[in-house]
Amino acid sequence: MGAAFWRFWSVELATETGLGLAVIALQTMVVLDLGGGATEVGWLSSARWLPYMVLGLLVGAIVERMRRRTVMIVSDVVRAVVLGGLAAVWLSGGGALWVLLLAVMLLGTASLVNDAASQAFVPRLVGRDRLLPAHQRLDIGSNAAQSAGPAVSGVVIAWLGAPISLLLAAGAHVVSAVVLWTLPADERLPRRAHGLGRSIAHGLRFVHRHPRLGPFARWTHVWFLCNGAAMTLLVPLVLLELEAGPAGLGLAIGVLGAATLVGTSLAGVVGSRLGAARTIIVSRVTSPIAWSAVALSAFAGDVLTAGLSTVVLLAGLALVGVGMGIGNPSEMALRQRATPDRMQARMNATMRTVNRAMFVISAPLAGLLGDAIGFGPALAIVCAGFAIAAIGLAVSPLARGRTAH
Image (cartoon, rainbow, N blue to C red; front, top):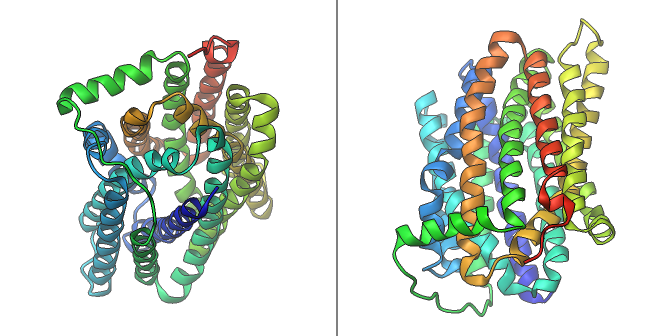
């Protein structure tokens, strides 16, 4: 892959570690420090992804006109400052829900900018024939960080408190910025394109009219709608229904990350045997099955004992992770192979904008639904949505082979 790629790999590892440390801390602050429930967790998730929906297309067009490495450095510094500032506010006794939501929106904006640049950076480090193994290696590092970060965060929160976990997350982003600064990337000067409005419209048309990306994008949006709801319901399920505490939530997210790491390690073999489209479909089929197990764990005391409920929940999350790990490298390779360099940032921004908009919509609705009818029944409804997304992709032109350039 080359030295530049592995330097970039270490940057992504540091970034994902920081995110893993921060997410559990933020969710714990909402539920345990502020006494919130599923509704408040839903608002937290919505605030995190709101910038993607509002600014995503604009950011994608702007990033294409800037040096991508510089954009990543600035976004890392901003995230470190926001996390450190939020920790300071919390330690001084100024914690409130509006403060948390504001900080999360700032983090989401910085992450949006970073994502648009970092994903478009990969094809400049490796050839198109190496995109699948490149993304497999990136995902392995990312999943390892997402597994270790929440587990460490849960222990740190239980021992020292959530603000300390935020300070550690800020430190991880500082490390990422420093390594990026030393990255010896031979980056071309950006080409001056036409107006921003025209660039945004071109990106939307490119993705949704493309014979490969179009069907994939539409059913991926449905999957993200369901995933946003499921991940929102998972937090109060673990903290309130199962009463597992921050350490239990860290364990659950850690199992999800570790299982995703296992799936990612298999992604190259599965992708080479089945091809990108069939690998993605297999990944999507696992979602309704796996989340059904998580939904079953919500019925502790009615159907399952508390101990068995925890086992079933962890088993379901493990299957969720394996499915996502197998599919994601093929998804990224499919997207980037079909996209010229001048469109990479806009393509990524277009996909992410609509996908994250699904989070913004589904997270608060799932929280309200979970508080109204219970976490188990709400997750059962979400599982039906996952099934529709999987079936839709399986019968789409992508699956039937009409995917020529």
